[in-house]
Length: 258
Image (cartoon, rainbow, N blue to C red; front, top):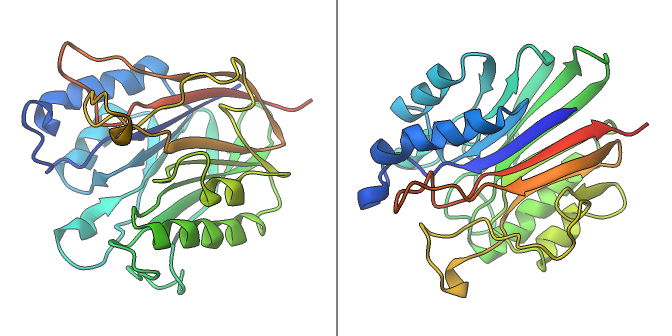
């Protein structure tokens, strides 16, 4: 089985008051450890003391993240992926930018507010010898950028030709064109492939906001048809008024198709 988690941990410099990273980082790490993923995709992880805290807290995982680049201090943000070293061996890895020039570091297109990346790793499963590609991303929030990011990523996905697991914060709901572009005959949504159908899929909650306009199902785990879903979950654990992040972490337990 393969345990997968996607978690937007909210950048460490955000002025979040009682939910500032310094207050919630232990809770965020505890939720990761509680699920103990083989594959972990993070979003909004800054390559400063925030990333170092994650690395030190998960010593059994290989951490791969690339600065998204672009102007300003936000250039240090990453959408890193981590994998359990006892479960997988690394065959190859890379990063590209969601733009008209994917190979150009820090490149931006389609009125994107920030540069956005896709990190990927080609991994061999130590128990089965089977090979998969794991990718993690964080789309922009500008509507014109979101759908074009999906088209750019779809083009890359169509070239993979092997078992694939994709995690990310896609800044789009599941009735969007972006969702339709990324799911279909070869890729499925783990949460839509496992019961109960119609369950609450909200992941972004803005630290417990109840208004519908503040809540959305924008964090997804997508899988190729090489995998079957055992279970999925949205982890809504909190400590009183303290949340691990402004997103709930999402998890899936997968197995290879027979």
